[in-house]
Amino acid sequence: MTIRFLTAGESHGRALVALVEGFPAGLSVDVAFISRELERRQHGFGRGARQKIERDRAEILSGVRHGRTLGSPIALVIENRDFANWQEVMALEPRVFEDERKARRVVRPRPGHADLAGGLKYNTHDLRDILERASARETAARVAVGALAKLLLREFGIEVSSHVLMVGGVPEQPRDDVSWEEIQAIPEDSPLRCVDRELEARMIARIEAAMRAGDTVGGLFEVVAHGVPPGLGTHTQWDLRLDGRLAQAVMSIQGVKAVELGLGTMAARWPGSRVHDEIFYDAAERRFYRKTNRAGGVEGGISNGEEIRVRGYLKPLSTLRRPLRSVNVVTKEPAEAAFERSDVTAITAAGVIGEAMVAIVLAQAIREKFGGDSLKEMKRQFLAYQEQLRAY
View 1 (cartoon, rainbow, N blue to C red):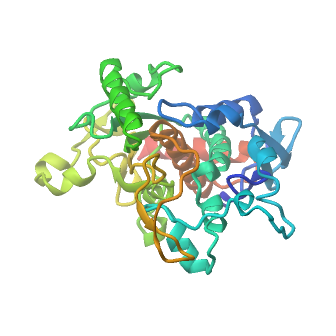
View 2 (view 1 turned 180 degrees about the vertical axis):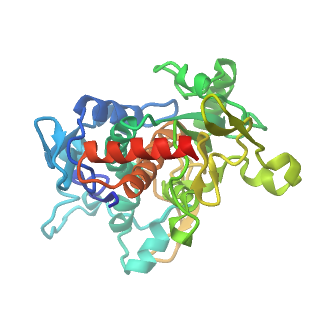
């Protein structure tokens, strides 16, 4: 048994949709919590005007009755409030526009976006056919699914959170020792979810400078999963390794260009004596542990009982107020890249989306490990496994 999900919908379409299956029966669903997670995705310094329009709320259409999951597929829908301004452009039926400007066709691809690659792949000269689905607006549906995954993980003592380590090269050398307690202490109104308020002010100044220049900046976020038991994932097949699944999930977020677990690239520079986490045993607790966590909580494709730490490197957004050079795909003449609304950075939102993707992967792994059609059955298996670990 595992958890699977699909999303559908366009950035300016009627709604985003998610269809999820594999959740056990009997899980309490906190709709207010899902709404808060969606709201968190819309926060962060450097976001654009669209966040003032959308007030995302997930409506559950199936799979939940009287506040609890049924074990059947769960369908969620998130209405796009901005659709009222795009009904003609995004209409299902064929449309003929007397004024070509009202069609809002896109023929000037943005460097760094899916526009041109998608236009070539799907043989369309109206790149709106591509950008509407390629847009990071799609991640609102993922965050809704991730909220369900977090609710399941909490039943097993697992919490997932994120923080921002770097924005636009500030600082040059991000910290690698931010504790779970520091992350938990970040106030809800933090503009960038950074544990260091002085550093956060410098990050904001960097974003403001990019804003004045009509530019964009990327950054680095870290997702931490606390309370993960050993034994999730496996070494037995390449596509079942937990680290590979986590990396793919975070890399799938629009704009993420690199992913690290634990030390990441630094592990290639240091000697083994400095990289690997020495193993200790606590006789009183009857458990193995490490005093360091350079592996990021995964060894050999299997969780080792330490915190799972995944970092995502977000590139600068590809829609710039001062457009880069491009080519009109119809006339083939040089042109400036298209511009609609854009953020200067979405690094805080990327961290929230990263939380959702990590939570989904861990929820999948815990379903695979403990099975069961109901939450009670899963918990029985989990408690038996805990006893097995203590008796090892």
